[in-house]
Amino acid sequence: MEHADIRARPSKPVDCLLRLGDGTRLARFTTIWASVGVRIGERVSSSDGAAVIDCWRPPGTVAGPWPEPSPAPVVIEDGAYLGAGSVVGPGVVVGRGAYIGEGAVVTADVPAHAGVFGNPAAVVRLWTPDAGWHGAG
Amino acid sequence: MSADHLKGMRSRLSDIRRSRQAATATVRSLTPPPPSAFAAFGKGSWIVPPARVSTPGAISIGNRVIIHEHAWLSVVAAVSGITPSLRIEDGCSIGRLCHIACVGEVVIEEEVLTADRVFIGDTYHGYEDPHLAILDQPMAHPRPVRIGRGAFLGIGAIVLPGVTVGEQAYVAAGAVVTGDVAARTMVLGNPARTVRRYDPERGWMSPSREHPGVGQAGEQAESWSDGTPADPN
Image (cartoon, rainbow over the protein chains, first blue to last red):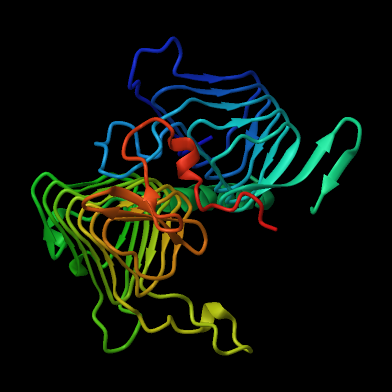
């Protein structure tokens, strides 16, 4: 939707820097920074201001002296949801149908059908085929 | 022509006029003021529209500053006896959707880089009166905010009143900075806490473990989360 910022700027040669699956809907003020690779699956949805970034600094800006994690590809699997203002950072794989809580900052992989919240994000709820939903939520 | 017909036409005309007025007002309020309206506006600087800028006369922009789309530079004389001032020094690059709320003094020193959705405020909405809507209460007395030379603010970072972020400090994505950040340290989380400190001899150190931090790309995914509780319990 309107006001998205999609910046695909390769830092090294890749086949496809940014892939968006069928039926995916990202809301307003979305930020996507792809410098090494961002893959978003099918039927992924988001609320306003969600960010999927494979580098912590805006692509094309000069690296500072900080021990910042280097850019790494990000994958959002099918059917996941990104809450308002959430940030999915470099190297993260968000599993199928996962729920990223509002304002969460995700720096580690999210299992399929997990609900993660907070900064840094932690798994609060989890659905498994055997046990159904369980967790503090 | 019936009276109803005429009424319908009038109402449609009024709707058209209204939406035109709204469009004009939108363009006007989201077009940055000309450089001459600012207290200072250096060479090679840009505020990319749409941007909402209030009181440009209290805003000083250095040379080669770029402020990306959807900035809101809210500089307002909201507290009596205090003249607000916002200064953004040479070479700063401010990301999209940045909101600076300034009723006192906010200084962003040279070469500061911010990612998108950064909020910097030197005040907050007063809430002392429990019987009055917060909307109707005065803004709190401002406390100066300063972002040190060459610092970085990650995506969605929030810097609260009275905070000084030191030179070359690194504020991670989503951090809520409630207190001063020393020069050349890295902070993350809400509330933000220090996870790395630069030692001139040993490089970036993790203060909790006093082992050398990683200075280069590689094992960083783990070291980044050092000192970060993965489990909120």
